[in-house]
Length: 180
Image 1 (cartoon, helix red, strand yellow):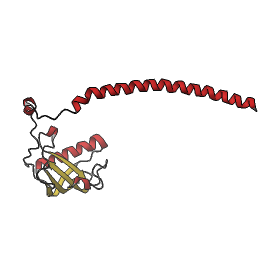
Image 2 (image 1 turned 45 degrees about the horizontal axis):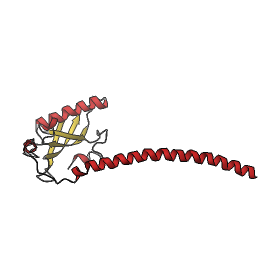
Image 3 (image 1 turned 180 degrees about the vertical axis):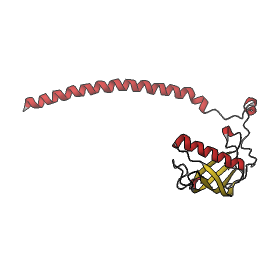
Image 4 (image 1 turned 30 degrees about the horizontal axis):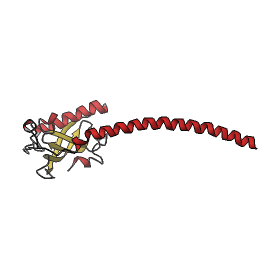
């Protein structure tokens, strides 16, 4: 029994020695990392505690006009907006859903809201209507016409959702999120 206890202790000592060596090696690495962090903190301390200054002339000259919206966006029944929706709908169906579905006509188009969150926000005109698709079905459509919502904000743009055809659930449930 005494030998067995001694043998077990000897194995434990071997493992304990290995652990001590690992701790010593890690402690050295940790010490170097801690020292580097302390040096970096001391180097950046003057920058972080410096007082804030006003923009200089070069910084003021950089064009950041802010949100100067005119609020001039097409009406809900604008043929240009409806054509853009129909074209992009057909393109989306073809490219992403391998479908030949397209909008053939719009009906009962009317405005739901205009700038519902106030004049300081990006102007949006929210609309609702009915579309006829080439599968001979009649579906509701919700869309918004957004100032500076086109390509790189150069013109107005549209976002739309046809009820029953929101296949990626971007405006789920049932296009509710496409409204105001």
